[in-house]
Amino acid sequence: MTPSVHAAHLAQLNVATLLHPLDDPRMAPFVEMLDPVNAAADGAPGFVWRLVEEGAADATALRPAGEDVIVNLTVWETQEALWDFTYRSGHLEVMRRRREWFERHAEAHLVLWWVPAGHLPTVGEALERLADLRANGPSPRAFTFASSYTSAEAAQHLRTVPQP
Image (cartoon, rainbow, N blue to C red; front, side):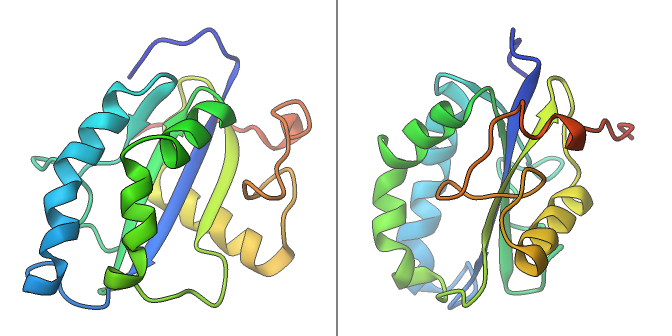
């Protein structure tokens, strides 16, 4: 985890429903991008942490949201740092090609929320925030890039969950 001077960090969960199993040849271009994109995230300014399966390089084998759904859970120092990585790096190529590999979601598939610096969100916490966004729309507790809130606005929702 990268040291930070920020009192709050931005957590992000993105879920994606696979069109094909990861070992299907049609998914090969996506799978080939995983290591370089994850390495770019790990080295990006403002990056703090990302979920990985124990003993693996990524979290694609974890399926807490369904057998055909992969999750991406990360923490960033600021919303700007996450935005820059998402839309101003090699990650953008994955975004542009996502319809080749993932179903279009009818409901929210990305949620952002503020966590106390040093807190690593659990998958359960992240899925609960996504459910909150889907049920109630954007709020300081669960929001999107398009409807964002500052850490000050979300201060009452910053809670530390004990780490296992």
